[in-house]
Every structure is written in C-alpha cells, then in structure tokens.
Length: 364
Image (cartoon, rainbow, N blue to C red; front, side, top):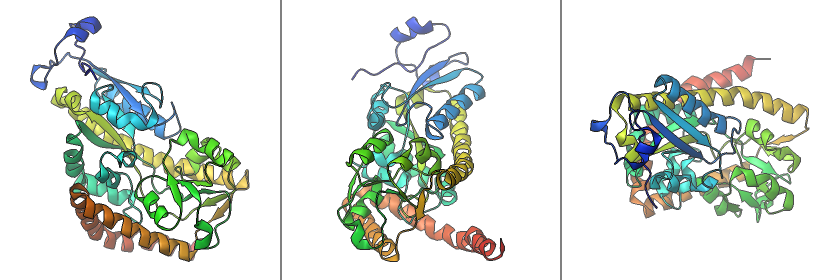
C-alpha cells in the first residue's frame, strides 16, 4: 500500500504537499501545518466513544492554535471498524481511535492495554500508564507495527452484558453464543460459552435474529443508544470482564516522528485531557441511562450467581496464564501489570473501596 505524506506546509499548499518528500522533525518549520485523518471503530458521533474522538481532535486544534487539524471518520467511512490498526500502521490514515484488545490476533499482548478480567480499576490503570511501566511497554510493543499509542479515553467499569434468558447457575451458561472480546471472551469460552467478536453496530441485529444469545457492549449510556434493551431482557451488573476499558489512540509512527516537539506535546496533553474527560462523562451519563433503562424500559438488573463468578475467575486466570506462557511480550507486559496492581491495591482497598462500604452502611 502506498504510504501517504503526513505534512502539508503553509508554503507548498495541498498540491505541493502531495508531491513533497517526507519531512522529518528537523526539517519542520514553525509555520508548518498538519492535517491528519483519524479512523475509528465507532459509528460517527456515537455517544462518548465517537464524540470522545471528536473531543480529542478539537483539543489538538485549539492547543495548536490551528497548526494541526484532525478529521475524524466513523467506522466504515474510510476503513471497516476492525481494520483501524492495520490502516494506521500502513499510513492509510495518520491516526486511529479504537480498543487494543481488538488486535489480539495480531499482537497478543495488546489486550492488557484495554482490560484484564478481575484486573485494575480505571484509576489504577491510569497510574500504571502514567507512573509505572505501562506506557513504555505499550510504546515498545506497538513500535514494531509502526505505531505510537496513547490512552484517549476510558469507559470505566463495564457491565457484564445483555442476556435473553436469566442466568441462575453455571449450567445456564452452557452453549450460549455471546459477543465478548479479549481475555474475558477467552474466559467465557473456558466455562462453556461460545464467544465471538464483532463491531458494536452489529450487536442489535445479531441479538434480534438469534445469531447471539447475549452480548457485552459497554455500559448503560452506550447500550441505551444502541437500543439493546429492545432485544434482551436481562442486564447483568457483575463487573468482572472490564473493570476498566482504555480507548486507544494510535498514531502512525512516521507521522508522529515528523511532528515538531511542541506539537508532540500538544497531542500528548490532549490525549491526557480526553482520557479524563471521557471517564468523567461516562460516570454521569451512565447514571442517567441506567435510571432510564430501569424506570422507563423495565430492564431487569441481575448479578451472576456465585458459581458463575467463581468459574469465571478461575477461567480468567487460566486464560492469562496460557497467554503469558505462549507469548514473551505478553509475559513481560503482564509481569509489570500484575506487579503494579499488587502495589496499588492495598490503598485502593483501604481508600475508595473502604469508603464505598462505609457509605453503604450509613447512607439512606
């Protein structure tokens, strides 16, 4: 595939830029402008996920005083939803917005940078990325694929998903067809569930037509937007699969290296700001949507029985163990991930978790 030119200079204009050789950072001038395309795995302007990508692009343009603009494309506009990784690596677009566990077939260790079953919370995950080895390991892993990654959003804890029938025991899980990506999908396979990965836009029809018996998507805000309550009655709150879910921004490494240092700083800080902004929005919008689902649409909230949760925990640990044994990069990433989780968990337990339990005991 022919690599695109990533720089359009003020003096050359669009036509001149198309014919210009690749411009390195050392050659860049203060009046150079950069016009990028971002491909995403989300429908155009989809709540939080799609609008989060828009939010990032807006921040970059504002912070750069217009020197850098990013045009955001919804899934399918330039490339299909699950081809973002390859498109950005090849230079079809300078940037992508997606979730790293979609690329497990290409980069096994990528899964640890979205969500780990029974793993770290969003606060803990951000701490690993910003203050532990997380970002450095992510950079190293993706550099082999000509990509530079960033955290550009987080959904916070996700729901366990929508089920057409109520789950009363582990036996009820056997043979179900479930949409669930990543390590959590492998864990479900281990307890007798058949899992598939598909874009969010296909979930409603797949549940409606019987292709799926159940599906994980995100949480109340996004699930309500897709109308999943219309095709499944039971909504499971057992947060085990994605206690945190990072949305990644990937940048073609050649395009990244061509940016001057000040614009690299702009992109870095815009990513941090968008990461926090999306997490904060989900905290508010999920609360609103959950009330609507329960009060207006009579959705039945449920939690998995104890035998299901116990089986999922054991199966999750087995899936992780298999991966770290089979893939050296996964071993290195997970060693850092699990070591950091052990460091931060004691304070999480005596801090926020202890507070939530105390609030439960006294609040009316």
